[in-house]
Structure formats: structure tokens, C-alpha cells
Image (tube, rainbow, N blue to C red; front, side, top):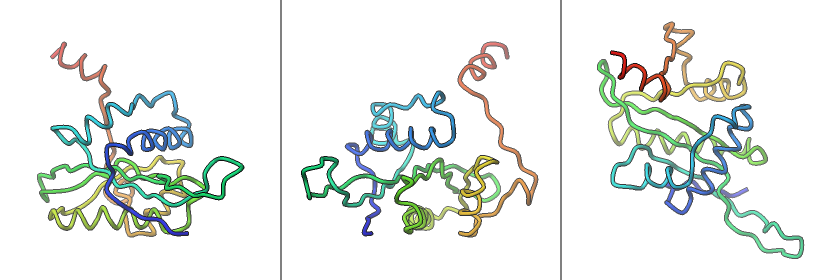
Length: 174
């Protein structure tokens, strides 16, 4: 199956939101997705770029029974952003990588990671981080097979966060 990895364009945002919702469904977290096409366009293609994204597309049959025609469909995405380490300098964070289930096992995920790492090396990034849900062993094994190390196991790091409500509470009370 032929596919191509390319930089996402504003007109891809609807497809990316569709894939984000597919990923959330797989992770049993659909109620937590608040992303819209508008926000994705603003934050990735507006004056201030908060993220970068690559997509993979492939020719797939049209979804009508009476046609033998194919069309290009976005079947995967990988969204990342730059961060900074006080120990090492420039780094990247891979927020999501998702391949539609029927297209898995065809090298698409590997091609997306390779493209992101090429960009990171061009930008002189020293490392890339990502997080995997503890129950998602297939994803963890995929990343480990590509050379990623589990720093929770290795170094004992734990990921922590404040959501918007907790951020507002902190600012108000401190």
C-alpha cells in the first residue's frame, strides 16, 4: 500500500480532529476531547504556532458503492511541539501519533516518527519525549522497538499536570 507523509495543511484540520476523536475513542476518553477544527487551525497555522504536525495520506476507494474511483484520505497524523531542557537545551515533545487501525503494520507510524526526528535533528534538538498510557502495551512496545526508553522505569520520573481549573485556582489563591 502506497502512502505519503507530508506536513499538515490548514485544510487537513477536519481530518486531524476526526483522527483525534478516533484515538480518544480507543483510549476510552471521548468525553475529554474538546478540540475543534477552528482551534487546531488557529494554534497550528495562525500567527503563533503552538504545534507542528505531519499527516500520512493514501489513496482509498470512494465510500460509494457505485464507484471504482479512489481519493486521497488522511489516515494518520503525528503532532509535536518544541520544548526546552535546562540540562540539554532544545527538545521535542510528541503529543500524539495515530494511525487508523486498518492501516497499521504498514510502516506508517515508523515513517511519521522518522520525519519528526529528521526535523528535530535539523533543529539541533537533543531529545524527544512522549507519554504512553500504562495499559497501552502495544504502543509502549512499538516505541521501545524504535529505541525509545521508558524513563519512568529507568530514572523514576513521573508526569504531573494541572488542568485549566486548577491553574485558575492556583493563580487566584497564591
